[in-house]
Length: 147
Image (tube, rainbow, N blue to C red; front, side, top):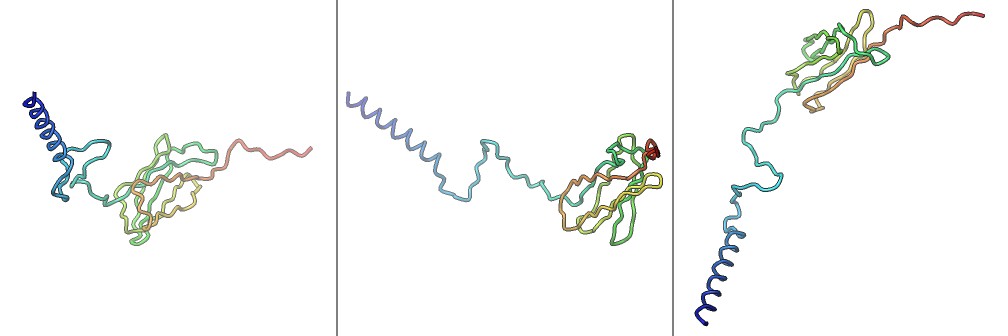
């Protein structure tokens, strides 16, 4: 019986020694090769974005999208302009905008112009969304009648 007891103690010691060797790592700089949980391993290919974009919609005073509005983004430093003509849904998009330049964004529809919107170089948002409201006169408005 003592042989069985000695064998059980030796087996238990070996299992305990193996388990403790797995939980303590003599090299504190060692990073585990298996990731558990919802943590993502760092990827060397992950880079900070080098440009930003602005998207949005051009709407009239009642919030309806305007098709055919001309949206202009102006580089205020070099006075370079880029334009976009909205489609049926009133949406526009400008990509590849620098983080180191201030921009001005404005929409024009027929004779009406939206208020200019500034895009600051100090705002490091990668994907900006701006709604441009172009005040239009409603053709359905009538003047009050004198009674």
